Each structure stands twice: as C-alpha cells, then as structure tokens.
Image 1 (cartoon, one colour):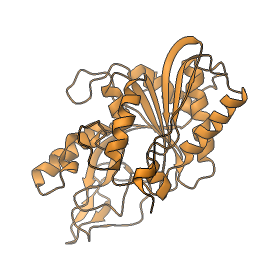
Image 2 (tube, one colour; image 1 turned 180 degrees about the horizontal axis):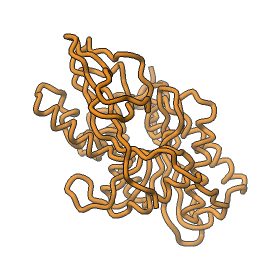
Image 3 (cartoon, one colour; image 1 turned 30 degrees about the vertical axis):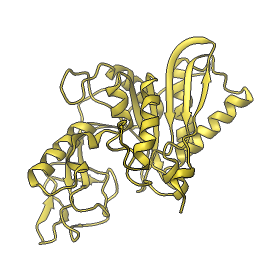
Image 4 (cartoon, helix red, strand yellow; image 1 turned 180 degrees about the vertical axis):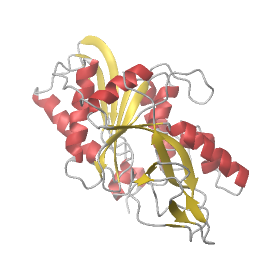
Amino acid sequence: MTDPATLHLRVHQAQGLAPGPRLIVLGAVHGNETCGTLGIERVLAEIDSGALPIVRGLVTFVPRANPLAFARGQRSGERNLNRNLRPGALPQDFEDRIANRLCPLLAAHEVLLDLHSFQSPGEPFAMLGPRDNRGALEPFTHAADEERLARHLGPRRIVEGWLDVYEAGVRRRRERGGGAALVTDPNYGVGTTEYMRASGGWGLTLECGQHADPNAPQVAWRAIRQALALLGIADIALEPPPAVHDEMLRLAEVTDRLHPEDRFSREWVSFDPVHAGEVIARRHDGTPVLAPAHGRIVFPNPRAEPGQEWFYLALPSDRRLR
C-alpha cells in the first residue's frame, strides 16, 4: 500500500511571452480516471518538442491531482477529493492536504478544464455551470464563457444543474437525520469547478468516456488543445464545434440509497432513458422507486453507501449554448 507521506503534487507550467489568460488543466482528480493524465502528458510532450508553442498567458497542468488515489489505481485515496474541496488549517486526511495545495492553484487562474471519465459505457459529455445569477448558492457571471468552451470541446451532450440538485439532496438528508457529517454539509457538493467559480473564475468538467475506453485519452487531448486555441494561449487552429448538440440536460433530482438491501430494478447505465412511472429501483421493504417524469438516469451507483447519493434524474433543458 502506498505511503501518503512519500507523495507530492506534480505541477507543470508554460508561460507565453505575451499577456493572456491563465488556464489550469487537471487530470486524475479521481485516481482511476487516467484519460486526463494521458492527454496532459501528450500535450506536455508537444510543448516540449516545440510542436505546440505557448505564446501568451499561462497554462498549468496537474496530471495527477490526487497522487494517492492514482498510485493505488482507485477513485479516492482516503476520501473523494472532488467533494468538500476547500483549504483548511487542520487537515484531517490526505485529500485535505492536497486541497491546501490545489485550491490556491485554482484561485490563481481564470479558467479550469477538469478531465474525468466514468464507470459505465457511454459517450463523452460536459458538465456546465449555472446560468448567470446573483443567488446565494452559486452566484455567477461567466455563463457565456463556459457555454462557448462547452460548444468547442467536442461532446454532443451537455449537462447542467449540479450544485442546485446536490444542495436539495443535502436538505433532505438533514431532514431525515442520521447521515454522515460530510453528506449533510452543503459544501460537500463543492468540487474543482465549484471552487473555481467561487474564486471568481470559470471552468468545465469534461467526462471523456468510460474509464477503459481507448479513445478517452484522445478526447482529453483534443479538449486541451481546443481550450488552448479558444483562449489564444497557443497559436493553433480552433476546430469548429459540432453542428448540433444532440442533448441539453438539467439535473433535476437526486435519490439516495437508504438501506444496504435497496436494489436497482436492472443494471442502469448513465443516460439510459426512463419514463414517468417506471420502476427504477426497489427499497429493502419492496417499495418501488418510480421515475417522476420522462428523463434520463445519471450516475447510477449500485455500490452507494446508505445515506449517500444513489442516482440522479436529468430532464431536458431549455438552455441553448451561445
């Protein structure tokens, strides 16, 4: 087993000689999601060879944002780095110590591209932040910037609404009582992009495909180059976006697993369609969990711990990318 004390956070930077934006690119926030790491390493090799000159601004690469999880080949080291992300004076675990290094890095940049993959088969998709708003949960003024980047990253499916629906789930956990402290803390829904927005920047999470998909590193590599081109950090051609984004979705509801014997009705895959009244799962006492509307199931997790999120429901969104 890897000793956390032997690990460090490896950071690569390239600065152009002309002023410009500051971009940070993360890989392996979850250690078993290696497509971002491979995509970053390919781009670094291109920069070092002179094939990809950085002419303005700054780009920072963190190929293994969670080195403990990466070394162990698993999603988390001691906990999920992409939840409850914030610096703290009294770090309690390895991810807290990483957060104390990673959060200042994020805050020193304007734009974030966070590269992930997922467990079930499926095509890549991008997670978009909130629309411009002055609300208390996630006030924001860079929606147009995120939408423009989302258009060019490549995936035809875009999903919005993460923090709103997560916060609603937190409220329900509090009402039920008995949940672990973290999953009843609204800040537990804050990951890399949410922290970036709270620090005045903007950014996207790109889910590049299934963990083992051999094409996922190519998706990550292309997305990095598209971001560099769009921001003008590298003088390379910006490829045109897909003519049509097939699907804009809004996360609308999260359902928690409440008992170890709660079971899905079948083996669900992210973005499988569900119909209003369809049985998605059954509680341990046989009570059916029904789809409240026509939509798609997202992030189904048959191994979820009781009291934690089990699956999300996504509905069609009326948002259009600018």
